[in-house]
Length: 198
Length: 233
Ligand SMILES: [Zn+2]
Image (cartoon, rainbow over all chains, first blue to last red):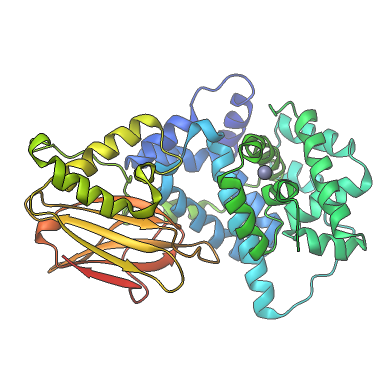
């Protein structure tokens, strides 16, 4: 349970005023500081792995991709620029791209069609069981509920399933130009609801 | 097909563009302040979605990652300071010629990579200047049929070289160009770039050549593909 307790502590500290600045740790990582890297890993491994697991589904493949992400973080940490976003955003953006690439590559390789099912959204019960519940999670659920159905479906299919907007259009049988607009409207609404600076 | 490229920002922030569109959008993003300004907020929003499905990874992953990074070299920061050993004054005419050669058609601003802040750009141009000013500076240029060129100025006396890549073809699938300096001990990574970049190399005096290979994002420990160009020093 040690790891879970540690994660809970970090999750709550991010809302109660940061005790560790992830950006500083990332800068130190960029200078070759392995203990700073370990701290970055401890702070972000649940977010990276959980996201990869959601997008990729297969646990061992998700683990493989998560490892690659952290090695990439190690290699390229010197490129992190705090003026262009938070450390967490930098890592998660890199991780999502890798996860989506993996799922597209695997699917192209197996020539398997992706079938849209209604269970594509985040399964919040599963999240609660994983002991990594944080305040942000409640907020995400509430903010998602504030979107129109089409905005929500489009954003969720793209983010959690790795669909391109053209694939989202296909799955929902809606014009791609409309999907592009709905994704934008959805993200803007989520951003504002979450109190993120525009 | 004409698309208003700004409208691709939101799908881009969710990694929801097809590869060709993604490439086109990234080129747009490089020079669109409106999209740049909005990107961080969209990425922060997407990050919350990722965070909402956090899941503790298997405990063994941690030790595997930490073991792996301990033997993985990091990408070198592109900017490194070297001592200016020469008086620049006496070398101005020569330097101007070398600088003109190095920068080619892209103008003096080509020294500074777009994202560098002013301070880094200063440190960079000071360093480049000292290589260009060296009396023994030798210059080489290669142009690619796929577009773009690479120019190299090497000074054995300064033990340094500067390589400038201009507008090389963008690579698909998150690949990068990686620069290597090759001596008797083998290739040594000098850093990576995606299309254009300026790199300062030390220890060039003992090097045989400089080569560029195509590698996965973040670069490789050793070259994994045949060089697209090799320049003897
Ligand atoms: Zn734009």
